[in-house]
Structures are given as structure tokens and as C-alpha cells.
Length: 114
Length: 116
Image (tube, helix red, strand yellow):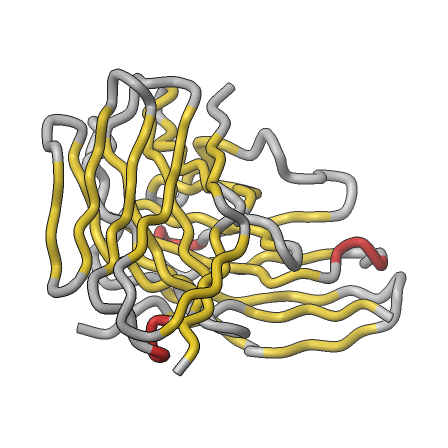
């Protein structure tokens, strides 16, 4: 059974710092990995999707890397802003029979202090 | 392009009452998911539909939870009777069908359920 772990559970940084969020998974037979952002009381917003054949994806100040063989992904946020404060979740996608399983970590709660 | 729509946004009920949630996925998305997210945890899959058929309901508490997706579009999730531990955010998501699982999942805003 796939297990996804995110470390740290919470992170507080001053504005302007670069930071890295970590995600690890136990079964490397994945098809893709998604990073999501969740604001309090809201749904999930997809930030980046990395296919299993890719090593990284970039969108603006965000860069996500994937090392499938070691079961790890990182989300790098450059020049953090207070508006980046949210919970960041990673999820890995696998296929089991005819079902496409999306397994989530528990998230990292990020606070960027002005 | 319209996103995944869910209603209601919030619901407060007493234990042992019943409740229903509604989801309208992105047009053309064959795959629809219902997730339960308890405060401080990641979302947990309850049920997955491919068109109007169930492909995974292994974590759905079938004694009290039920879901259907008529005509392969909208879906409803029902809880009857509700328990205190059902208090959570219920998220609906949809994606295009890709047998290899390479497609992106899109989520709605969720329904926050409080059982008192």
C-alpha cells in the first residue's frame, strides 16, 4: 500500500526566503506526482504535475523535482511572499486495475511572515 | 473553462441525521472522485467513478455512506445516519480518463460538514 509522507508538518519563514518542502513515497511505481495548495476552508489548487518520466517542472517561483527511484519529490519556492501562506500537499498517482489511485500526504502548513 | 462545482459549501447537522452532497465535474471528465479530509490530515479517497461505474470504493463505509453518478456526469454522496467522526471536508475531484494515470486531477471547493 502506497504511503506518502511530508516533512516538515509546519514551517514558518520570513518573507523573501527560499524554501524547500519535502515529499516521500514508499512505492516508486507511480505515473505522476502532483503538488497542490490548499488555503484555509478551501479546496485544492493544482500547482504542478510531474510525469514519472520527468525530473522537474517549473511554474513561476515554483520548482518541483522528482526522483522516482528514491521515492522523493521536493517543492522549491523562491523569494517567498506572505501570499504563499497555505498548506501544500503532494499526491502520487498509480493505476490499480481500472482504478487510478491518488494518494495524498498530510501536507506542510507554510506561514510566510511579513 | 468552468471548474468542479460542489454544493453546499457548509452543512451543520445533528448526529443520526442524513445529509447529501452534490458535485458537478468538469465537462468531459470521465473520472470522478470523492475524498474525505479530516482537519489536519490529507484527503482520503472514499469512492472513484469511471463514467457512471464504480472502480474503487474500498474505503467507503458502506453501512452509512453511499454515492451515485447518474448518466456519468453529476454525482451525489450521502451519509445516513451521520456520526460525530464524519465531521470533515468532503472534496470532489475530476480528471480525464487515462489508463496510464498521467492526467491532472482538479478539485472543487469542498463541502465542510459539521456533525453536532
